[in-house]
Image (cartoon, rainbow, N blue to C red; front, side, top):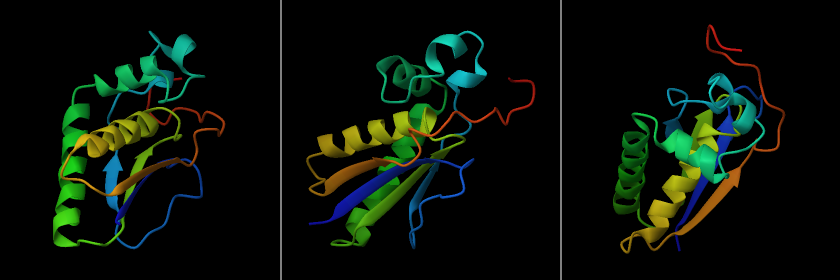
Amino acid sequence: MTTITITSFGTGHADAPQSANPVVVDTQPLRNPPEDPAVRARMTQMTGLDRDVAFYVMTTPGAERLVEDALLAVYDRLITQPDTDIDVHVSCTGGRHRSVAVSEELASRLRALDAVTADVQVVHRHIDRPILPSTREGNA
């Protein structure tokens, strides 16, 4: 059986996942709770596993398209490379909010597709790491 491994991680950490030909998903354009004064105090210590953070991230304009594009890329690999395991690398800055929320959404949708019989696994590589300072200008 094919295994799809979705790994969320933060590009601000030195140990990004390594694999030969991953599907790459960059969530950095999406809203980040630590960078938004309206939710910073409430959501910074949470992760993308928390419902409020996941909703916040997934309602960002462009989030739906990002997940749909990743679904199509994975599905294409399942068709063109049957019986080959698939790695999906989902990145954000710190690996706690955006990449986690998008990884969970992608995994949920893959598991719900009748045509996908692969084993879908999710690894959150940096979810327990300290929060990194903002990399966007003008944000704390």
